[in-house]
Amino acid sequence: MIAVILTSPHIHEGQLYPAGSTLDLPDALANWLISQGIADLLKFKKTLNDKEQDDGLPKT
Image 1: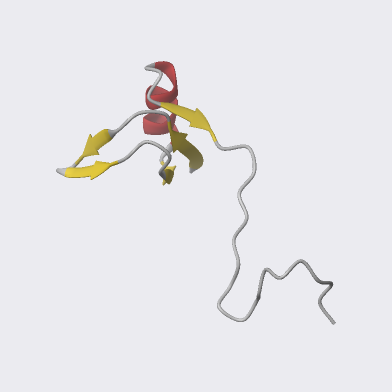
Image 2: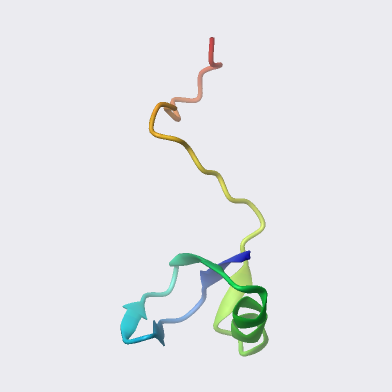
Protein backbone atom coordinates (compact mmCIF):
# COMPACT_ATOMS: atom_id res chain seq x y z
CA MET A 1 0.00 0.00 0.00
CA ILE A 2 1.12 3.52 -0.82
CA ALA A 3 -0.20 6.69 0.82
CA VAL A 4 -1.03 9.50 -1.61
CA ILE A 5 -2.59 12.94 -1.46
CA LEU A 6 -4.94 13.90 -4.27
CA THR A 7 -4.01 17.03 -6.23
CA SER A 8 -7.40 17.14 -7.97
CA PRO A 9 -10.81 15.58 -7.33
CA HIS A 10 -11.13 11.90 -8.22
CA ILE A 11 -14.07 9.51 -8.42
CA HIS A 12 -13.38 5.92 -7.43
CA GLU A 13 -16.11 3.28 -7.33
CA GLY A 14 -18.76 5.99 -7.41
CA GLN A 15 -17.35 7.98 -4.49
CA LEU A 16 -15.95 11.49 -5.00
CA TYR A 17 -12.69 12.23 -3.22
CA PRO A 18 -11.84 15.97 -3.18
CA ALA A 19 -8.39 17.38 -3.78
CA GLY A 20 -6.36 17.19 -0.58
CA SER A 21 -7.76 13.80 0.41
CA THR A 22 -5.20 11.29 1.61
CA LEU A 23 -5.68 7.69 0.60
CA ASP A 24 -3.88 4.38 1.21
CA LEU A 25 -4.00 2.58 -2.12
CA PRO A 26 -2.62 -0.56 -3.72
CA ASP A 27 0.74 0.15 -5.36
CA ALA A 28 -0.52 -0.10 -8.95
CA LEU A 29 -3.43 2.32 -8.42
CA ALA A 30 -1.31 4.80 -6.45
CA ASN A 31 1.39 4.78 -9.13
CA TRP A 32 -1.23 5.25 -11.88
CA LEU A 33 -2.78 8.25 -10.10
CA ILE A 34 0.67 9.77 -9.59
CA SER A 35 1.60 9.21 -13.27
CA GLN A 36 -1.67 10.89 -14.36
CA GLY A 37 -0.97 13.96 -12.19
CA ILE A 38 -4.00 13.25 -9.99
CA ALA A 39 -2.03 12.49 -6.82
CA ASP A 40 1.33 13.01 -5.17
CA LEU A 41 3.20 10.62 -2.94
CA LEU A 42 2.45 11.36 0.70
CA LYS A 43 5.90 11.53 2.23
CA PHE A 44 4.89 11.89 5.85
CA LYS A 45 1.97 10.12 7.43
CA LYS A 46 1.17 10.41 11.10
CA THR A 47 -1.32 8.11 12.68
CA LEU A 48 -2.50 8.28 16.25
CA ASN A 49 -4.33 5.57 18.10
CA ASP A 50 -7.41 6.46 20.15
CA LYS A 51 -5.41 6.79 23.39
CA GLU A 52 -2.73 9.15 22.07
CA GLN A 53 -3.10 12.90 21.97
CA ASP A 54 -1.22 15.18 19.65
CA ASP A 55 -0.61 18.00 22.10
CA GLY A 56 3.06 18.45 21.23
CA LEU A 57 4.18 17.49 24.73
CA PRO A 58 6.45 14.55 25.49
CA LYS A 59 4.57 11.44 26.51
CA THR A 60 5.29 10.25 30.07
